[in-house]
Amino acid sequence: MDIPNVLVASQFSAGEGGGMRKNPTLLCAPVMADSVDKMHLDVSKAKASGADLVEIRLDSLKTFNPSSHLPTLINNRPLPLLFTYRPNWEGGMYEGDDNTRFHALRLAMELGADYIDIELKVANQFYDFIRGKTYDKTKVIVSSHNYQQTPSVEDLGDLVARIQATRADIVKIATTALEITDVARMFQIMVHSQVPFIGLVMGDRGLISRILCAKFGGYLTFGTLESGVVSAPGQPTLKDLLHLYNLRQVGPDTKVFGIIGKPVGHSKSPTLFNEAFKSLGINGVYVFLLVDDLAKFLSTYSSTDFVGFSVTIPHKEAAVTCCDEVDPVAKSIGAVNCIIRRPTDGKLIGYNTDYVGAISAIEDGLRAKQNGSGTVVSPLAGKLFVVIGAGGAGKALAYGAKEKGARVVIANRTYDRARELADLIGGDALALADLDNYHPEDGMILANTTSIGMQPKVDETPVSKHALKYYSLVFDAVYTPKMTRLLTEAEESGATVVTGLEMFLGQAYGQFEKYTGMQHQSSSSKKLWRITDMVSKL
Image (tube, rainbow, N blue to C red; front, side, top):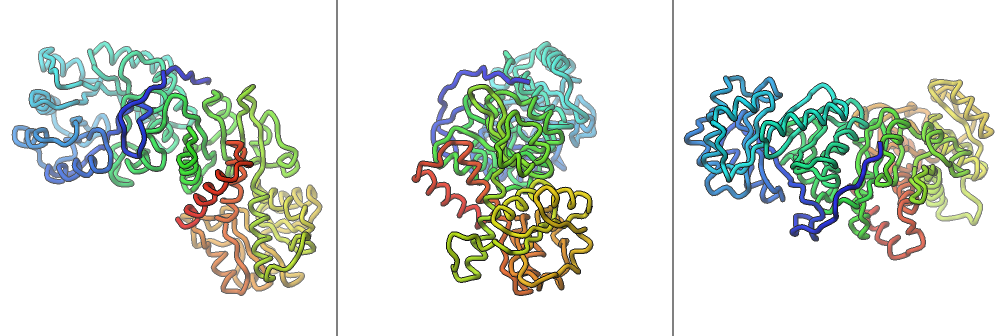
């Protein structure tokens, strides 16, 4: 699905994060406190954090007296307020009758509330209740929430028309993403909307709807005050929207980059790339992309607005067949970790920067162990190099080690896959279960390229501690946590350890060069390395 870029770029007032705002999308902080006093504190916190308005969730209050509580909330408010009194049948906590809700929302309007939210299912009843009276100071949001799926474009269009027919000032539709491609349908409705439109797709696969709505013309997005305290599934924090994604600087012409994987939330790539874009003045935003079907994702987001992707587990091998052209090195490895959409014709070009980042880090570790000895010959030359894993990263390291003159052995849970990769690169194979007893010589190199030991399963390790004494250096591609159980036990066994963060930074630098073409600009390179140093300390 090609998402048109129909908005006209314009400048808005300066906002949190510095510089002029490039979009009018409002940032709303939902407040779900159980007391009015706590709500007052949270509203002040939202203002200090950079929110434009606050959603007051009246249904979260343990005790609520509209005649006394609403005036205290509305009078002297530091930010515009949106009042929502969500019933349990629409995902809220209110279990009473509608008339009680209607009375409270009408009173909020009479007191000058900036916005109120009423559900489509009862919107006409509500307008009958207030006898069609309009309140100049209050905009009415009529909302629809679908917690099962995201309907078709046609059904979403019909839903917009039904909401507009209620005399809503603002249309709000929230759906659920079963896969990330569902979000494209919401974007298509958003860019064509002729009325103020809030379109959000809930769940982890819908995260981009909450960020890229600023690019495609959404009226507002929600950012929580605290991580995990959400009013709907998949909401990011206010802090992340403003400072990780630089939301104020996302405009109609902003280019979209992202990390494709499953899982993907552990990645530090958004922190690294967004900080680099901000520092170097690049008009781009880098997002998490939780993708189930890579080919479907790439064909759905085919617009030239989506220009570059990092690829991680489990999609690196599939990416080879999804690209229109593949760099010869990536083709030899059989894995792609970087995809660029060529601006001239929209074709997808695949590269592999994994092997350079990992092999360079391992070589540096060996040179440090040897007190910097050696010349142009790689310290890997002649070494027995054991690679755990036969996936995309495993292929990259096996290829890189072989190119440097190492003797390569592939260990994998499935022996046949290990044998297949070993035959491809000219090495040996064994089952991972046999690795504990494999020690033909001392001073070997071990490289784990699987996700074993990654958060949250930090107690796992691919090889027993007693086997690590035969290795002079151990590398782990996992970098969350930075020191995995494997690396901790390797260090205790006397081996030099190289963390996955070093590989991550090296391959990310290669990707950044592909994204921006800045490899020959030394000042930009220095800035990027300062940023990578910052990320390495997170």
